[in-house]
Image 1 (cartoon, rainbow over the protein chains, first blue to last red):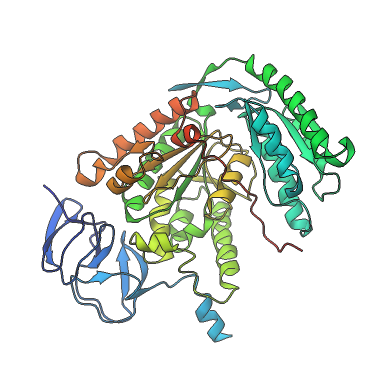
Image 2: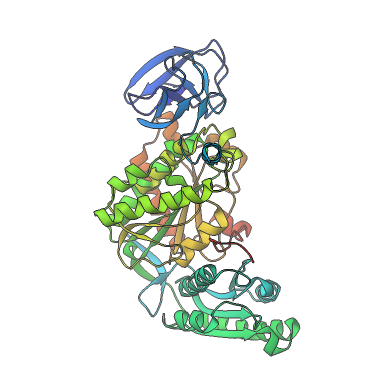
Length: 100
Length: 386
């Protein structure tokens, strides 16, 4: 079966698009051997991520079952999850500079 | 599994058989280029270091040049120096000679300028290539492969397909008694706890954490968010959002084998199996570090399509991205995009990578070699140019 996106771990709150996906589309997401469906609220370019469930400001973003960053705003389900709403927790010399 | 390689006096095996022409210092790159242009069968190493640096960095130049000279893909070596550099030529030359190969040395200020040195270098290189060309390939077990691993111009497909497939190939090579080297310490940030849990012992685990801490501190010292530098602008366009995400995809190359040791940049492993080497993620510095560590093949995962190769170590390009296969076909050696559609599996893809490495190791040319896109080289420095 053709799939639109892959989530890599059952705890992940984002999935990775393996096709260019369009707003309003019901995306087919493979999670291991299971499949779920989610309606997209934005266009999602190939290779980019979208939220599988609502995420609150400051909540950790999980991919591979591991933390890849945190939300910088509330994000609903089916939205593009990228640099505009996720920040890194590592290598943040900018935060360190503010502390100093 | 076997491959056809070139036997070296110290027990290592070459997958190529070049006469290496190495710059001792940035100031003689032109002479090296002139010699290499005129003599088929030579391969170069030019760089931007070797003078006006801290002694820490000069030490790295010395050991990197020694490691490059000892690389089994070089049959013999000509070192070109200017005569006033900080590089310790006697240490480099003795270090390479200890591996049992012929080393010649040309000093531009003693020979009498670039013209005379170029002419002398061409005549010497012609004679040495003739000598090298007499050597035949012989069959060796794949335990003689030393595989460097790298991913570049990554996108989200890199962590889904080629990196885990390289992890399978690495596990198979390690099981067969070979050596597999993981670098790119920047791309451990956010995933170091996973790598540390693969360490063979507590010392190795601590060594991995220390390398990452040192790299992260160095990046943070400039007072900026590393995003944009890591992940790169291209990574972000490809859908990678944070360094943690990039790292979690990148470390899939390590597979499941225990990590046996941690080395500084450009050091040849003294153990078999999977090892970690300090290096940044940028191509010239890591490819050079892997070559200096003795890699006779390098496997390189890409998402958006990275063209870079190294002068005398073949670099096999692998992708899981259909877009890269279509748009960057002149740079991609292996197309694993069927894994995404479910028509292929990571374990099968990993086995095919190892089979392809035996062919590349036996002389099949990579796309980068055929194109001549092989000049991604420089030495990784810690301190300032002074």
